[in-house]
Length: 451
Image (cartoon, rainbow, N blue to C red):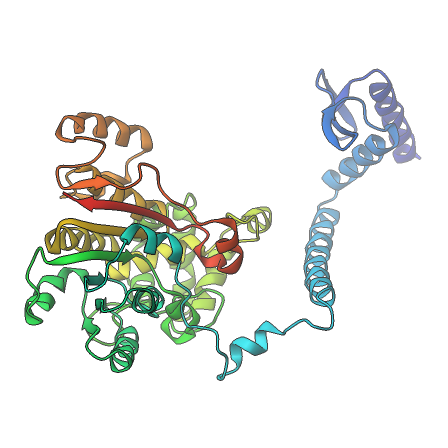
């Protein structure tokens, strides 16, 4: 009887608040704290502020009052919400598959089929790259990231009598370049090595500095590497936690599993902060250390589960990508480990300096990046900044702007003494290109002319 009487009393108080245009912002043990802010309501499809329906507010207040006083009900409600969320996601995926109609093609079977004609690598921003490189017949082009060969094949098919130097540190990509060299006799010269080894590789092929007409650098991880589960780059496919772009070329090179299971919590958090720009780096590093005490982290799905366990459920379902699609919370962690294992930023800097040395005056340089760390480095290089210490580019945007202002006297015409930008603003993919190749949604292209 006492509970019923208190509930009725609380209901009357809530009704009075609703009718008077006030709102209850906090309740505990049947007591209501009144504020002068109105609850948000929906009018004509728009979010506004005004008195909501008294019945809705009363039900909400009473349910919260009893949930706060009973921990068992709180846990039950959380479990029911998780089950409902899983059921809703599965229902949405089945509805999308059914709405495709009888002519729908099962993409999962197409990907698993060995006879699929889908290329291993879809070139990103191909039309823009060909436009800004402006390759002429008989010129020499350096593709510093051959990958699946998408850009190189387009150059060979578009421009006659052109010679392409196909560089890549991945042995699998190098084998594809050798196959392409047999198809185009004398027009493709495969080179196996890193950006930092480019000078030696070119000297072995009798290519002198300052003689190349155009250079393309497509930074980051290729789709071919992401699709191979045994390489350990993808968090959606279970495989060994490897992430080495060089494969088995360097047996003493540590892989991602060595990093996760060896470094302490402070070092792991520093890697996630610097190379993944992850705000919850310390909690993720703590979860890694706790998990590896029970069992070593050696699989990609295992690491993804450990990272997801360090996030509350609300954050897991709230993360979205640039296309507003659900994004895995371990994406930044995988990116940070991949950059650290392969020393990508230092290699990118070495590649930029190598391209500056091999390009002739008037030669064109196109660089494609996929995250802010790479794009920031490329932008500063083309502006003529001193990149001898890459750690300075992990500063906040305000500190970077201050440092750029100090170095502004050394630049001219919006670029450095070595580069003239072909376009002042960064170039991003068009909507049709993103729909066709969603992996290139975050790509940024910068083009410059060698002075």
